[in-house]
Image (tube, rainbow, N blue to C red; front, side, top):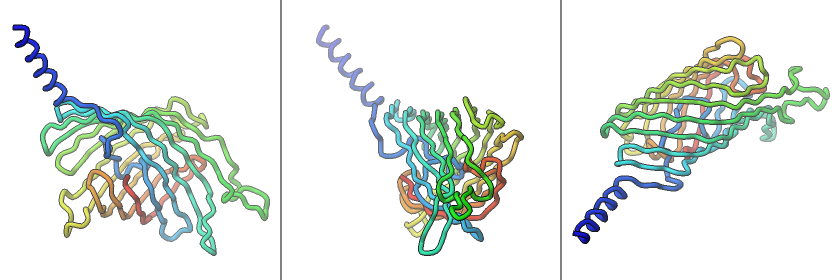
Length: 276
């Protein structure tokens, strides 16, 4: 009887272990970045058309711990660290930096697969952003800041909750951001967001994957302002993982850079990005 009980315990333990596992530093993110959302990790450039401005993004998100249950549910804890930088072009291949924003923080992800075509989940981020003017914004000849716009203290700490639902290759999401602390204090503490992204589920000519995405963010800079971001592009590599993207981006709304938080922007741009 004792031998039988021991055998049953071993079998049960083995079954539990096979269905539930912990992985450290998994290869791909549990929750893929929301494609048209501005505050996502990117590694690349965005060139505005008709204007001497470009954006350089350097950043990454990484899952540190992943717990998988029954191969249908997964929980992750990870970290975010990236910058998005405004540059201007000059002769002799010079690109002075006008403004730079830093984001760092932690994230928690949850994903549940209903079947092979349907899933839902959510991502919670706890992050800090600070923004700064750089020497490219200073006019050395006139000895003053350009456009008579002096540096301000801009920082915020926030919670961002982004639940989503995905069927086949179409993912819808909606979210809320609450600013725990913000400077300037005229900025409202609540932001609301919704959007979608779609990746064609088969590669064209076995080479690339077309995609489309849209994001609407209702920002609060003292009054509610809609911010639209539309992306159309193609991706080489894994649909839900590492690769290289070329895309068109249309943006309308307040500037994404904190030092210009109250400035209206509208532009078309072409970008390249490495998806890590």
